[in-house]
Length: 263
Image (cartoon, rainbow, N blue to C red; front, side, top):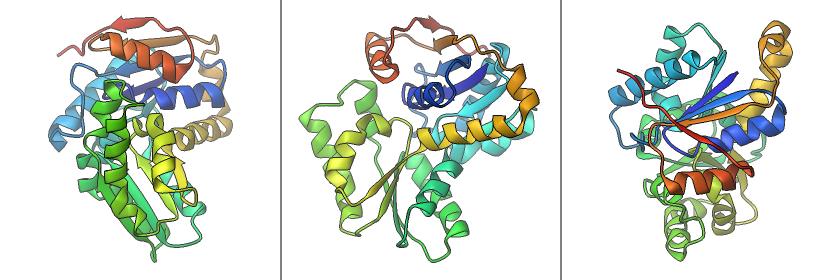
């Protein structure tokens, strides 16, 4: 199985991208809905949650872990890689590579949770690959709760997105990295508000291509993964809105399984 975790529902955009990129592969997902959002938590707490989430997925049969959470990716990747002897994928590096490759100018925008933006990880990685880059970042703390509540088409959401993006729009950025896996759910609104000339970088698509490429280069692991089209969706707390939004993202009927992280 390919294991995917996120603080809540946003990582399902990664699960959906993996289904499209690697059809038939078994996937197990954990959404830590009882403890969401991770973006407002301390680094130590995010690291502990990420270790617990990864361990949970491995016990469910995962042989690859995809950290489908930008906050976890920015703060906990090295800790997860050090503890578990399986391939670990994070969503930040693939998005950075995609942004650099499609940006002919050096102005790149990033939106994310406060924890992700404050970590400075995107700016650091972008400048490693494009030293002349000018990186403009904006924390958007209200977007995750809006998505979790299913407010994708509310006028309030459109107004908030416009306000968050305005400082980046005036900088005339060429690419905008969606630095949170919840944000692709709002991609139509974001694209309209930032303008047609800006490339929208969706980390869910970028990381799924990375996983596909890795499996192509590691045929032993690829053969060891089950391909029965099984998808298991675990959450630490079940809500009616999660189920509704999950069906919207995955474009299929789902069965939620409630299972809390064991201390």
